[in-house]
Image 1 (cartoon, rainbow, N blue to C red):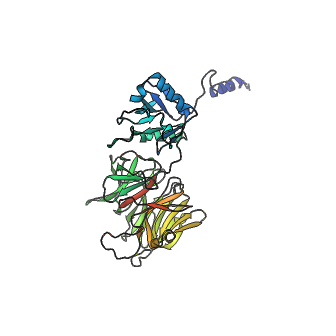
Image 2 (cartoon, one colour):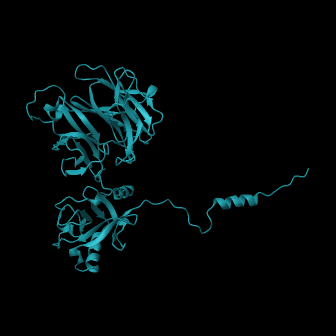
Length: 452
């Protein structure tokens, strides 16, 4: 038998050749995130992305590399003598594309500019809150317009680009309140109660993790069902109508694929259910004797809920449970809970009892309690009814109500009835009076645009 041998060298050489970059060909590079810069109307870059060290979203203040502000001011004065007094147009761009237009001006100007946001290039000399290496984007000049205008500075494309670049300065965020009496309105406050801002509310519902959809319970004479819609309320569709409780608040899983809600079981008690966002694979999670409610997914996908005990009079005990089936873990048993909320990282749960707020570490079981009577003796019989964490997980915002019977005549109120409380995990609580009756409350990282 004749065995023919064939050299493997040409094949090996060919495989190496096709597996290696062609000589002289550019290497593939990861696509860079779009960055924020400042440009003249003709597209010339005035402040490059690398010259912006940080951006304070709360005050719209840019911190720049050394001498950039001084060089820009000199450049503007030299290139267009006298024009700075009237206002020199320019744009804020993301990825080279203009997002909004504004004007440079000077403190020497006597002009009024309300048709566009403004940067006063020499403001640092007169305003102690602006350093020599900073520029502040104002809504108008010499101050904010005396009438309501759209604020283009809050564009989320700019926020997202700055966040991706790691240039957002630390921000205490905003307390977002949905008042009871003002339909369609949202009110924003700084955590110290200042800077009140009224904006138009977005459609009600639980927002999906990517912010593009909302889930809500649609209750009519014909049905009570979980619906999903786009964030602006359009393209609504029914997900499931299996005896859904009208007051159930849907909760999204962190991947946006599932929704938890409460629906009636055969005995009429509410039980926790989960369904895929397309309506498939519905399942009942709990089968509690006296019912279960308030399902909430954590950021790492764990499902928490309350299992009710028998109701003794006005109050009702509950078990706080995490997980399903054999993996279910009771965090707290037989407590008079008023509400609870997951921390942003999913490692803690804050929960309220009458007279107390507790920070509970899920893994270790360690707890830290804040006693309301230590804040003020009159708060000993108050319980939290609205609760949310701040974005960095270091504090919560809450609204309390008196827990028990008391005689009230007319518009009588006392400390605790109207206040919004900020309670840190470590440190002293503080509070402010919003001037509105609070229906819903949360803590967000930045000011949203109208209807968001």
